[in-house]
Image (cartoon, rainbow, N blue to C red; front, side, top):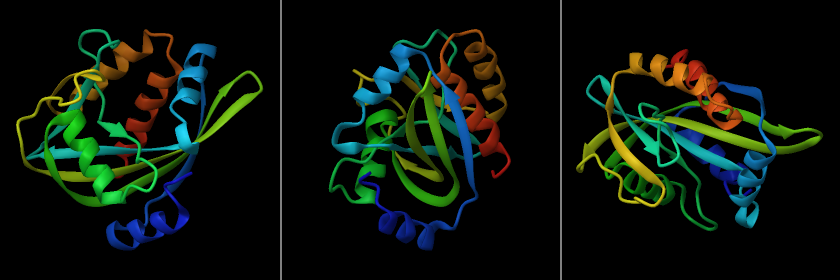
Length: 183
């Protein structure tokens, strides 16, 4: 994992020590292989951002999501990338914005499982403040749309995701439910 223990310690020293929870996330064989494909250089993390512009948050939708389904932007650091450089890059790529990190609110030690195979994963969740930029994806190959939403809209996203056979999306909706406890 190149989001190292030292880096996590430095980030927590600056943005707060978050609660740490564990979550099992059963996924399909195809999802398992997709997650495995994102593990270049041993990656086993993502940083999820709740970017606030006033009382609303920025949400994104991927191309394979059905209409009406959004989630908080997230992404991984690249090998040897500075934490802030990676987080600011992801916010720009996925949502087209510059941000200021506010608080480290949650760390989730997830286990993506398919049968007896398991991928250990760690999601680091932060709140951030929108500073500038047009809210629109820059990485249009990955993200279809970015927009502002009320936190209450996540209930509709959860309803849509529940009707899908996607352990990854079910993980994201469960993650959001946990995040709400700390916002």
